[in-house]
Length: 99
Image 1: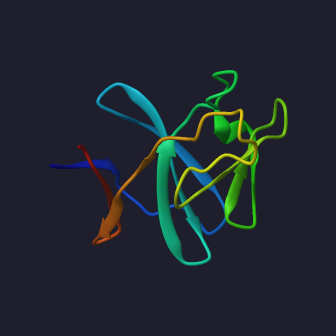
Image 2: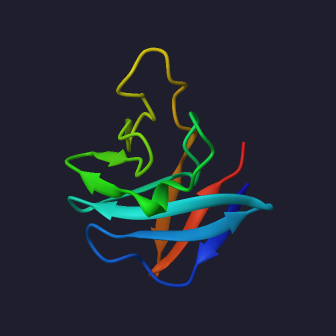
């Protein structure tokens, strides 16, 4: 099932915080591709939107760990991966697929 989370697409290189069934998520446009992920660092539960995008990774502002936007893979093997979601755009509206 697809759920609409935003009425407009985020600008390139920015992260937009929103919620998906009560879960904090963010949507970002990076190098022309949309990504969506849970808006919390798996290490310390800080919002990843407080960090920044570097290459194809989101970097946590607290300890500097980073996570691949496409796969959620952590930069450190002892830090859990970030939860990612399938995302699509239709008529500038952004939808996330709920498992």
